[in-house]
Length: 191
Image (cartoon, rainbow, N blue to C red; front, side, top):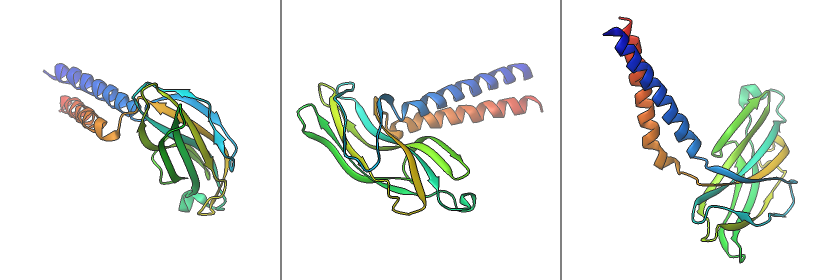
């Protein structure tokens, strides 16, 4: 029956879209804290409350502008040195990292227009301590190691309830399969 095939196809597409969206939202986690900060400054956060024992991660939002007169041809590339440390309430180091906020970083919420790019780069996952209380120390340099951009805005973000991409991959693949099956059923309905 053609109309049943179409209805089932549309339901599969809807379920596939919902599962895919839910899976993609779970990966970065839940943002619990954000603070704007000055580049080239050593900054220490207040104590931040996370879910005790949860997977958590630091994110850096950065807005950059290309100094390339024609960024559309080459794309915007950058690497701003970052160092950060996550501490528990007693000052014990949970995680420390020296890295870069770069055009190659894992990102969420990217916006690119005419040589301007903004987005949040995500860094290593760590486990919140038993009481869930952490603080951060961080420093982001305004000097782009690739000398191709300038930074105009920065903020640090802290996420908890993070789900690693590898754990969400089966759900995302199933959702894509449902989408494809739904599309196939809808298309074959008209033959």
